[in-house]
Image: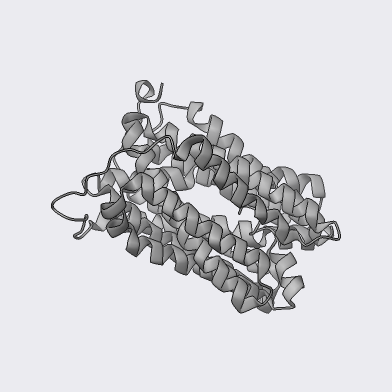
Length: 364
């Protein structure tokens, strides 16, 4: 599904819509994340985290295949809503499952799992970009989701079936602390910045450098490539730093490199800057989620479910609002939204420490 965001200008051209209408696909993903967040605790209580991951993958593929087949905007928006519910369910429970399994090594496990994710986002960008330059519909690139899910099930899913006994006390519920909600807001800003770049970065790339829409979509692979590299190797850099310190460091990298990307009119400079933006974005979701799980360590499923609401609001509003700004002021000026979000996220992490310390011995 990684090729969908950068291909938004292609979808807009196919359907002949405004940037704001095209941005409603991002809104649908956001609404889907909110729905998945509310459903997470009861679904996990009934099925367990592992089966919930597979349930999410099934729902996701139904939505993705519908998106390929259906042509009209209201149909593709609905398809993305369905895919997004499955996507958020799979991602949320993958994080809690891995965090619980790897315990003190969770920071590395979550980051490197995200690195594997970025590899497939990179593949999605490449495939969609390549098909966009041919006579075939670029949407066919998304059809790879289905065989990958089937292969995953045949190689792993049917062989691994951990026992799940629903907690007699019922699903996790109750209130969460003010510290959690402040950190939750920081996560919202980081996701908003990421999806603004993922959905509209190709349009900015095209506007500043003058390349074609298909070329801009293909060159957007620099973003997930930077994320993949940093997610896999980033845990080995400065391992003595706390989770909060690492998060501030990569947010700063994201902000500085984005300003280079925003001002550049040279293709190679923009590509390199976008790669650095990806590196800065790389571990923000993993480290921010780990902060939330640490703050509410007694209610991990509830905490992760509520984090999905943050993701939903960010994904739903950020691409839509940026699309509106692009229609009103142009894509270049509209993208000033991103450094504002980055600065807000950095401020919250600085003011609301999670008091987590990732010691060197813990991530060996």
